[in-house]
Length: 468
Image 1 (cartoon, rainbow, N blue to C red):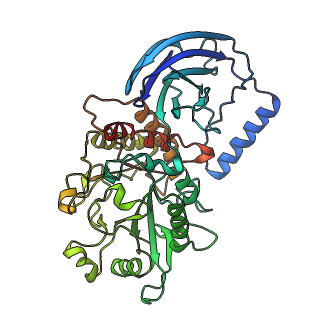
Image 2: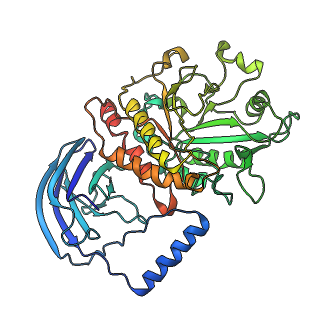
Image 3: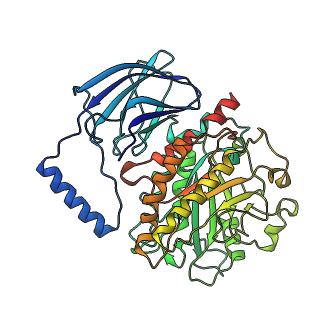
């Protein structure tokens, strides 16, 4: 079932007018399509992958069975429920909507084909704007965001912006995209692909391979006690090579890397801190306060979930090394780290699939907490000052090793669409900059579906409006 009438939200700083709606019949399914669907469903069962069927694209020369000129104006950051029916004969119908902004036309199909970009097509030469549309099918709800170039979306933001003020897409156990047991694998695509599509927070778990040898830098990528791949060890050095290459090509960007020691070895946190400081952290932001974008463009920001060796405790005038998340509360729906630099939602014990709704509730509540913030522009003097402007870190991930219905990909199949829906349709009077904080996700980018990441980046619109 889908909602009877079309709703629209303008989540940009530009007034937008819906000018025309064209309706197209649901595509007919032939025998080959039916066979392909059966084959795809079988593959999904065998690989434990959950996919939505792609919506067929409307060919540019297709003829609508109904068309209508309208004039529905959407002011910035407003929502309007229209009297336009979401379908006439079948809820599988498709629509082509044509909008106008500052005298120029833009077009989008809804539902948006999942295999295509959700970027709206400009119908005018030299378009002034780039828009992205995300369509929530059950609610017949289209939200329009200002499109960023996802590989370099931070370049649209001022240097004076605190990084904690941003809406940032992240990934949980970011390098777990390899062939691995379904309870271990958390990502559909590689970290390199994640970066290209806008992800700016990596959650990394490592185990030092030779902790007693100061000359060795090998850090094995792990997820809990398991390696991230069944085909052999994967290493942090190789991951950092890709990160460094990306930041060199895109110097407007920064990447927050949260690092935690896990695995089955006998290494200590203190040894991990030494390896990172000796072999990796040159050029990283390792001060214990939250930086502005201008301080960290082209650099990695270290968020550490490990304890320090003594000499690093004494760094920066005795205030430490890296943004301190070492005393991260376990399995929490809402907690502040003792350092004061982070507010955390990391409830992960979803023991039964029915508990996923509880997880969605906790994620939504943390988004609400982040959205109320209105952080100042400008460099802050020290970590005591940035306690007032913490990161809101919000994990969408959860799992239960013993229940197949609560393995990471199955949880993401429910949580991710629910949060897309929540972000697209929310809009509260108490919102300030309407930031989402850092949303740490599983299984984004599956089959080219980056809707959640686009939604998160799009929520920087109010912050951009204030800086302008």
